[in-house]
Length: 83
Image (cartoon, rainbow, N blue to C red; front, side, top):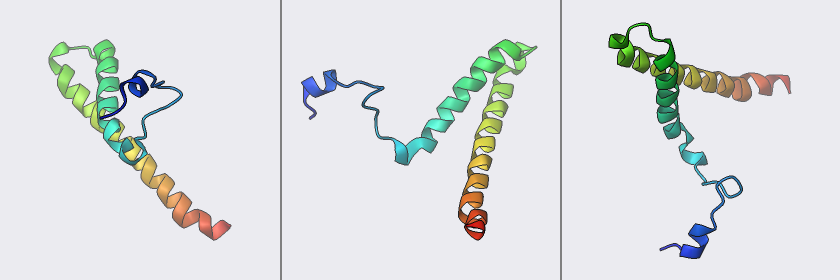
């Protein structure tokens, strides 16, 4: 059990939680919350709100995964040929 004084002394911006190995799990709620906020303002018909929100969330997630794949290929395959 962690020391209660150490837990009370936790400073979120100075001592962040080490989640570098699980960053991709945080992408799903982040994309969903961004899509909810965006579509709450932009959707013309509230009947299609959740369908459009889920579609936009999927587009955000696929876009970030695509950017990750492009960066991975660029840094590990293309760049070593130039250096």
